Every structure is written in structure tokens, then in C-alpha cells.
Length: 568
Image (cartoon, rainbow, N blue to C red; front, top):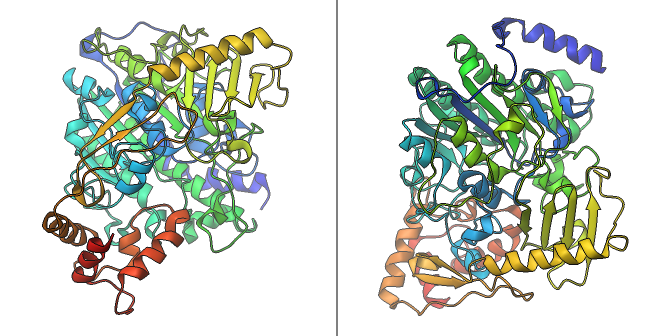
């Protein structure tokens, strides 16, 4: 099907759900008084590339609702997230601080893996967060969709959503057992499952949006704040037959990826439509972005990344890279009468850590909590259409693998300049990303003084990071304190906790078995043991699981699981 016919399909199919024609009220305006505080809906995609949107130049994928959102608001080309993977990116968005200040520099995984990385098992419940601030200011607050602010598995004592400032939540991906599943009470409850399960992966955003629509309806008298963190396009990427209709002539694996993106766009359209129906459009800030750059593709049909076909719009790097393709993501903002319609800002350096001070200011919050200091700044004037030069540089720390374009361990951005360095500082690169968006021209040799100044700033920033990250959980529920050697160029090594008494270990192991036995049949399958952990860990976990299975029947009893813990 040619692009023209795809557009014709969407004109026809969207005719019945076209949005109300509401008049915009002009351009920039002052922050509204308390009795007219705006609602806020922040939509965060997962692994969606900057170049995956039609409005950002993609000629293959249909995103009519996001294109319309951009035409009714602003599109910022220089927006960055603060880490190239999920959990730390979301921590930065929620707290307004660099995630390394909380010791979160990779995704939350199992307690053992977190300990190896010198990470806590969840976001510090004492952290200042945007929903806490808005709730204190009188907002109804909710979180729907992906969570991933705590460890893998069933939660094992992780703080629940009220601790972070939410009145309501329905989630997937590593929330505790007391938090409602995003599927509960929705029209797609029969498809209930987790992100790496089929067919659940194709329904997670649909369920998240249904929860969002209910919350908007219930709180239409406002003000309300909603974090809607959708599934697409995190692997496992799936498409239903109805999602594929506009892409019938597109070969795999692109067909599935394109269809998944368009499905997400359709769901976002339902949120925008609900705001129109309730006459909330003009007094609602809608923000759309993605947590990091696109996932790397695999040519192995058996891998979940086979359908990962996101693009960066030409920028170098992808997910896990501190090059722009890993941290520069879509950023669209609509607030009629305040944010100019149809404007593109190609120069303002705005980042996820700016969202807390910026959206708090938009909500009329005049003073942030005593003692709180954001790594971001209030960028409202940029949203109102006036390009800004930020007063603070941005810093990144990446502690994952360092091969290929993932080699940088630290990065800094100051104005138009991006500085990258390896962990041992043996490799350094410098780019002018306004003139060279795709980072093809390394200027470190031509700019030696700038390079030295930025290296010194990075070293000084590293010294401000915590050396010890407290956590109350490790394997089998033992307490620990992970020591993160923040300024060291060597690998982070965690302290080992003293061994707990064997009886306590067995009880904790039995309790863990009951939590992992999701279907309550008295046996733990490998899928239940794996939970939501990444597929790249599946091979080693499979070997471990098989070693627990003493009678080799392909499933674990509680006794087998407890006995295995005694041997570890």
C-alpha cells in the first residue's frame, strides 16, 4: 500500500472519532491563577525512536494523532532524557534529579543483579517527586502503565504508589503485589499478562488508556495529573490483525513494528478525544515523549528484538548509548492559549529533569519543598514559545555495557556542546550538536581548551554523586548497603551482607516462592521464575532454574526452591 492510500485509510477510519473543533486562544500567556490550574497528562512511550513519528520525518509509519498534537502545540528537537535505559530515565522525570543521585544508573533488575551494580532495589521513597508536589497542591494524581521503579518479580516489600504521591495506579512491569494490574476491570482483562508475554504485550497500552479515561472522567472538575507510561515499542513488540490493516503490503519485521506504533497513536487519540468531549482541552497540558532511543534490532526471529525496528532520524546511537540517538527522544507539548500551535524549536536544550520544576510552575506551585534542589530548571518560557538558554549543564552516567556506540560512560551537555568520555577517560569526543545533530564531526582536537574544561566539569560532577546507596533488600530479603564507588574508573563493587540464619533464609525463600507462583498451582514454571527480567538474562537463569529442578520434571516445587537456597 502506498503512503497516499494509507492516509486515505486513516481519513476514513478516523472519521467517526474526529476530535471536536475547539478554538485556540492565541499564543503565550501567563501562568493561570490557582482556580484555573491546568490538568497535566504526561505520556511516556518506551524505546520509541525520535524518527518513528511522521511529524519527525518518518514516511512509513502513520501517527496521525501525534502529528495533530504537534500541529496544535510545539515540537522540541533538542529534548533529552537523562539516561539511555528505562528505570533511570523515569527516575529523572519523576524527581527532577539526575538518576545517579539515587544510585540508579541501569534498569531495576533482581536484587542480586542490583547489588552487583551498586544499585538500590527501588527509587528512594523519601525522594521529592512531581506527583507528591502536585498532590500537595490539590491535584488528583494517577499513574497508569509501566512502572519499573522497583525490582523484578513480585515487589518483595517495594514501596507502593501512594508513597510516591499517587492517589491511584494500575500498572505493569515490576510493581508490588498490592498494586492493581493495569488489566483489572478493563475490557481487555482476559488478555492479562506482562510485557514479555503474548498476547498481553499488544494490550498493555489499551488497558492503560482505559484506566486513564476513567480517571479523567472521574476528575473532570480537576485539577488532575496523570502519568500514562505506555508499552510501545518495548520488546516484546506485537501487532493484532486489526493493527496491521494499513500495513498489509509491508514485509516483516517492519509490519509488526509499524502496526504497534500506530496502535499506540490510536490509543493516544482516545485520550485527546476524551479531553475534547469533556471540554478540558484548553486547560490541559499534554506532553508526549519516550524514555530512551530505539532498541537494537535482531535478525534472529526467535529473539524479542526481531521486531524492534525503531529509528533515530539519523542521529548516532540507540538505546544504551549516550550519543544523541540514545537520549534525544520525541517531545511534543500542547497547552492551547499558552503553547504556540505548530511551532518547532530546534535549539532550546530542554531535558527530563526540567519537567518537575517546569510543570510545578505551570500548576501554580510557587515554592518547591524546603531543601529540595533540582538538577533541572523551569523552562516554561520555552514552552510558551521563547527559545531559552539554560543556566545549568546536563550530565549523564551509563554503567551498562560499553561496546560499539555504547562506549561512553559519562557525558555532558553545555549549550550546543556535547562531551563524551569512557570510564577510564582514555577516549574523549566533542560535538557541536546544533551544527552537527548526527554527531559525525568529532571536534575534540580542534577544541582542546573546551574539552579540558568539560572533562574537569564531569570529574567534579562525579564527585557530587553518593558513594553509598542504601537499600533494605537483597537476595531472600536480607538487608544490605550497596557501596557505589562513584568517582572510580573501576567497576562498581557492592558490599556483601552478613549471612542471615538458615531458618530465616528458608522462610524468606518459601515466601518468595509463593509470590512467584503467579497461577497459585503449587509449582513454579520457568516463565514464572523469569518474570519480567530481560531476555538477555534468560539463558543464565534457565541454567540456574534447571539446577534447582532436582527431579527434572520441568517445574519447581516449593521444597525444591527452598532447598536450592540452602546451597547458594
